[in-house]
Every structure is written in C-alpha cells, then in structure tokens.
Length: 509
Image (cartoon, rainbow, N blue to C red; front, side, top):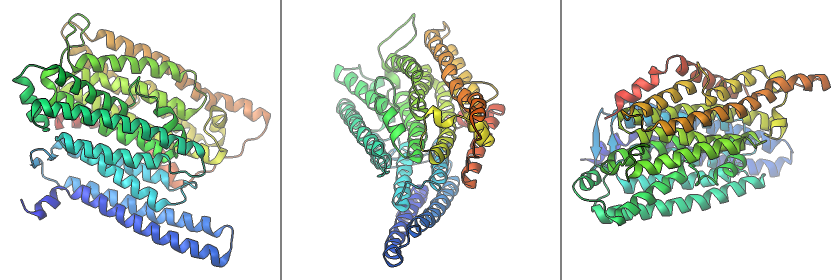
C-alpha cells in the first residue's frame, strides 16, 4: 500500500490534525499581536476585544475543518482495513466518526462566547486533537491503537478541564481527572498486557479466535477484569465515578460538555467492540436464574450499581452541573444494559442511547453556559426565573431534562424503551428482568430531580417576579441557535427514532 492510499483512508484524521495546527498557529500569532497592542495603547478594553476576535476567527476555522472532515468521512470506501485492524473502515465506524465530529462541532460553537478562555487558539487545538483521539478509538480493532487513542483523548481532556486559570475549581477538576484517568490507564494497559500474554495477539478478532479454542486461565480472567475496570473509569460507572462530579462542575463548560458527550460515545463504541468481539467467547451470563462466570455479570453489577448510586446521590445536589454528573453515572448504567444483553440488537440499542444522551448533554451544558456567564454561577438559585428571562432557553432546557428522564415523545424515551425491550428479549426466560427492574426504579427516581430543575426554572419564576422585575437574559445569537438546533434534534429523534436507530442497526456487522 502506498502512502497516498494510506493518507486517503486516514484523510478525516489528517484533516482534523491539520486544522488543529492551523488554529494553533493563528492563536499564537493573534496572542503575540494582542500583547503588542496592549502595551502600546494601554486601553483596558482592547485586550478583551482582541481576544473575542481571536476566538471568533479560531472557532470559525475549527468549525470549517470539522465540516471538511465529515465530508472526508463520507468519501471513504464502504469497507477497508489497514495493517491487521489498526485502522478499520466500516459503515459503523464511519457513522460514529461523523457523530463524534458532530459533537466536537457543537462543542466548538459553545466555545465561541466563553470569555474565561483567554487563549482560544490553544484551547480549540486541544479540542481538535481530542477529536482525533475519538476517531482513533472508533476506527480501530487493535488494542494498542485503542490505547493510544485513549491516551490522546485523555491527555487532551485533562488540559481542557484545567484550562480556566481564573477559577481554582478548574485546576482541581483537571488534577482529579488526571489522577483518576492515569489510574484507569494503568488498569487498562496492565489488563491488555495480560490478555496479550495469554492470547499472543492484540487484534480483537484474533483474541476472540484464541479464546474460543482454549480454556480461560486465571491470569486471562484477571486481564479481562482489569480491562473492564479501566473502561469503567472512562465511562464513570460506579464505584469508579468519583472524578466526574468535580470534573463536570469545575471544568470550563465546553470542556465539561465534550467530556460528557464525545468521550462517552467513543468509550462505549470501543467497550462494546472489545467485549462483544474480542471477549465474546467468555460472555458468561447475568441471568438471575442462570448466572455464569464471564464479563457479562461484571458489567451487569456495574450497571445496577451505577443506576442506584447515580440517581440516589443526584437527589441531594443543589448545583446543576453536579446533578448532571451524577445523572451521567446513572445513564452510563442504563447504556451498559445493552452490552449485557449482547448481540447486534443490544449493541445497537446501547449506541443509540449513548448518542441520544450525548446530544442532550451538549444542549443542557449550552444552557448552563449562558446562565453561568450572565449570573455568575450554575446553582439552582441561578436558574430561578429563567423562564421570565429567556423563554427560549427555558423551553430548550425543559426538552433536555424531560428527555433525560425518558418522557415521550422525546428521544430519551425511545432510547430507554429500546434498551429495556432488548434486555427483556435477550433471554427467553427474561433472565435480565432484574436489571430492567433496577433501571425502571432508577428512572422513577430521576424523574423527581429533573422535575426539581424544571420547577426552579418555571414555577420559582413567579415568586421572583413578585419580588421584583427580572432583566432579560442576554445570549449570543449563535449559541441560541446551537441550543435550539440540539433541542429540535432531540424532539425529531423522538418522533422519528428510526432515522438514527435504523441506521445504526443497519451498520452493524
């Protein structure tokens, strides 16, 4: 294979890397020019204006590069493989590359109005490099390349979480995320090394063939469990979720949105491929009447624990971002149900649900970004009277919260329905009924705290109005359009879920 053919197959990643370098160069040049203007003019408002102009310029180039990358994905061949699975192109990988790039695109749009990001070029370049990590994760069936993608993504997200130098909580978020993330990387790498030592390969397809023809040794079982623990950190599954609340609350809002969306989607794609392809012969069983050793009962326990811990702890939160963090723990538990069910239907249900959740979270964090920028915080009290200040933002937030709660006709309802129905039909004797019951109980709990957020936005507004008039909440027009588009997308996918669910199922191998 020539280098030209290799570049053609890796063109989406190459486009994003080149865009990151261009944005970084423009940010560096603008930063130097801004410093010179500040010294010569000594005007207090000039640096802020120059920074805003630099943010606009870098955001435009980053968004344009991501659009070109989506076009490059659409031009890829239907099926191709490089170097024994190092880079794999299938309808499924192409679809989720587009989804990851789309989530990065919306994160870039949320970055534009942020005033706390004083070096927008560097920030957007790191975000684009994190997107490359997502694309490597989605497009590989080789454990070493998957680990490289995890590290590229993780290192970028650590910096993004700690990027706001004006907020000490951002540094705390970055440090905690780094410590927990490095621990998870150690678990993952050690687990991969044990799997390689027992199977003699790092290709998922070859590992599956080895496991099918040999008995499972204790060392191999330890390697599988350690790999699952490493990914449990990445998806914030309980009890490996302790980094999530501080990272979601302290990181800049675009960083938190990207951590909660893009990294979750790619992690579930990779985790599903690892367990359903590489570790398929040691599936085991999580059925209550026929429990058998394997990775399935491990994921089932993580799922149930995540649903209970995430929903119960979310009840005590008074900060919207921390509430969304513990909600993310619960939603990670819901998504694991699809992987436990297994098969094409289970995997497609998990991927559909995590995609819907990611889109919803980006929109919710967009509303949080506006409220935080204009009121100085993101506690419940800052959302009081939001309906009177901005009916559009309040209506969009209602769509996001009700979708997370699973209320029809929004996309979150169909996502949960799809997951639960697949789990019930995975075994003729309804062996996963216990897990579905736990999920239904968690959904009932979650409805309460999502409605609390809506009560603060809509009902508490009347008491605020009686106390005094509320000023309208200003917002960047592009950010309003972005939030509105995301809300419309959630509503549209709830009315026509097959537009995405059918495409994911058809792309399954």
